[in-house]
Length: 335
Image 1 (cartoon, rainbow, N blue to C red):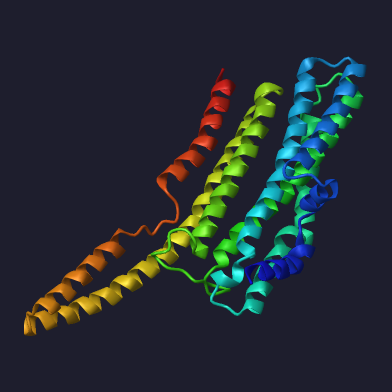
Image 2 (cartoon, rainbow, N blue to C red; image 1 turned 90 degrees about the horizontal axis):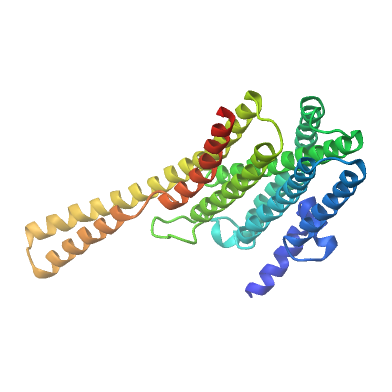
């Protein structure tokens, strides 16, 4: 029965694959090999241009990092879609909605996240900005005009993919924020792993950690190959702050919802405790006393349940993955 539902859902969702995922499917290799192969081909082209133009090893290192960044960003979008697929395949069991309504809701989000016109426009906009900055800011890095043009092409691709990745991240955050508003969710303070809220929290953390990895790789381009200036430093700090805020803000909304559920359970228990206490006062039998004791025990259990969907370890890992490279980057700039 479950297999039939998954097959039916796969057909329903098939047309909403991200173009990065479709590219991977065309190469017919498992994740993340296809985009790594594409990046490897781009690097080989760059290596040939460097070899025949007589550029130095620093330029070759820069082209290698550009190729790696292309693969990392494209694979990130594929990974984000895989995360969403894991939830979407069971969306009808996680929402207090009819199955058709649940599918319509997730279908709209797939369309908005992966195939909306805005996804492409954001990519083109960011790609154009990156291309402009690369051409006019780093003009002294290259000796060969051919290599510079090729590197500028890579930077445009990085910006285009980065814009698509940024839009995808915003869409996932928007989907998380719509839970309990656009659709009714099956949420419980006792459910520590399988509720939609906690799954959404886990997805946001994985997305944020992936973004921080791409962020570190992007920093390394300037750390190892290019000259650091105050403008680059400001951009790096802004992107680091965006990653942290991206993780924290949706968690606050999830915390608010879980806290409301927790308070609702506690209020219900308080009413039962008051009634049980009156029964004990009127008839202090062993049965009534045990009932009151059990209710107090349940109250302790509910009080002990976390209303945050993540652990302190997850938060520290993310903060460390952003702040440690940033501090090293700033120290290098200071020297």
